[in-house]
Every structure is written in structure tokens, then in C-alpha cells.
Image (cartoon, rainbow, N blue to C red):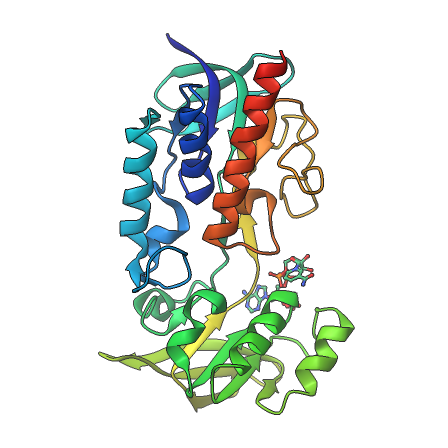
Length: 311
Ligand code: NAP
């Protein structure tokens, strides 16, 4: 059995994980980062990134993540292509076992396993991903200036995305499967008072239509009478929730909310277990941006360093 000791174990390889690694490595903590299944995280499935500071022109998401990985390596992080499959946080040092049979004995653990958008699961959604289909208005809304777009969902995210897009697009259609929104009433009021936004109730997306240039319409199915209708538009934003990657921590003693997001002390990445930190989307369902995840990764490494120094 392969046993590895480390002062800082980082689980996950998105902006939070790599930033934690950069800070921990530069503090001479010799971190080990276990990358997980989708190395680089959510940014590896996007194309143009225009909102990560430091780059005057658009950059590619996969390229940005390669750079973060190289930077983390260059300053001394050991990056392992493996997956943590079980953890024991009942006492320190913590014990984390990986898929390839390695046991990591870690003084501190930074969890940056991220979250992923929920998708409708229809084939055309995959086909036009990045060509008019998106799950992030803040990331991709800019590309639809003066065009018509749809948002699917009826929760806070869908309504906020619709209002954000209304500031950019010519027209926004919110498509919801029921006749009542799930979002907070104040958000619903703002939505209904926005002239650029209309709502199609009791409807589901049956198919996303398009051609070589990307999305050009939606086929909708009524939930009340199964009738089909079609609308022309240029983009569709799926906002039907996110799922944090916290399955392996279910019985670890870590506090999570009802959706599985890690609960951290306000304004810090500290979980309820001393020495375990939560950074990035796994502990943040509100902002969910690469730059905010990076900031939380930085905070985690600084907190891990502070704890280790105090001991
Ligand atoms: P959410 O509250 O779970 O809402 C998801 C929406 O998507 C629901 O309206 C749901 O419909 C719909 N939906 C789910 N699966 C669907 C499917 N397969 N097809 C069509 N529609 C589907 O998710 P969220 O809006 O991402 O919010 C997640 C959490 O973050 C919530 O607790 C929310 O309050 C919080 N949040 C807060 C803020 C804020 O405070 N400003 C902003 C964003 C998010 P039904 O209504 O029929 O179930």
C-alpha cells in the first residue's frame, strides 16, 4: 500500500484548487493536489473567457486552466492525476484514500471539488454547447448583445440570469415548467416589471434547434396539453440548478446545506472541522465565478498556513 504524508492535501483542480496550491507551495508547505476526473474543472468545457482579470483579449478556458496547472507545478506543487474516493476526517492527521490505492495522510485538507451545472439532458443541448447553449449568463451573455435569448428555469438563478441578460440582449424569454416561479417574490416582481422579459409558462424545451452557425430556435412542449410550438432565438441559458461535488464527504462529519454545499464560517473557508477548508463553488452557490473561486482558494491556503504555524 502506497502511503504519502503531506501538510496540505488539495482535492480538485479548478481555479480554487490551483490557487490554493500556488499559495501553499509558495509558503513552502509542499502541497499535493489530487486533480480528480475533470482536470481543470468547469472552465475546460467553456471557450472564450473575457472576465478573468489580467487578459486584455479573450482567452480560452482550457488554456487558462493549463496555465494555472503549470504555475502551480512551477512553484512546487505535486499534481497527481487521481481521484480521492474516501475520507476520514474523524481525527487529525486526516486520511484520504484514492482510486489508485494511495493513502494520503494530511495535516490539512482543502476541498475544491467544485460544482457542475445541471443540464436538461437532451441531445441537442450537447450538440450546441458553446454555440448558443450556456449555463452561465455572466460568462457568455456578452456574446448575445442585441439578440434574442431564452433562460430555462424558475428559481433565483434563472430570474437573475434573465435580468442580467435583459441588460445586454434585445429580448429575453424565461421558460418555466410550472405556472409559478420558485424564486424570491422580490425577484419575481423585478422580472415581471422588466419590459424586455416575457415568460412562457408550463413549458419544457423539447429540442434546441440550430445549424452550422449555432442555435437558431427552440421547440417547446406544453406541459398542459403536450402541444408543440417553436420560437426563433439565438441563445439559450440553462439555469435549473447546480450540484456540488460533495458525494464523498457525505458521512465525513462536514456540515453541508440541504443541497450538499459545504457550509463554511462566514467570510472564511473554514468548515466545521478544524483543518478542513472549503474553497470555490463547492462552498459558494451564489457567485460561482472563476475569479471568486481563485480568491477562496487563496484564503484556504493562507488559513491552512496559519493553522500549521500556530501548531
Ligand atoms: P433552484 O432554486 O433549485 O431552481 C431550479 C429551477 O429549475 C426550478 O424552478 C426548477 O423547476 C427548474 N428545473 C429543475 N430541473 C428542471 C428540468 N429538468 N427542466 C426544467 N426546469 C427544471 O436552483 P437555483 O435557482 O440555481 O438556486 C440554487 C440555490 O441558490 C437556491 O437555494 C437559491 O435560493 C440560491 N440562489 C440564491 C441567489 C440569491 O440569493 N440572490 C441567487 C442564485 C441562487 P421547479 O420550480 O418546477 O422545481
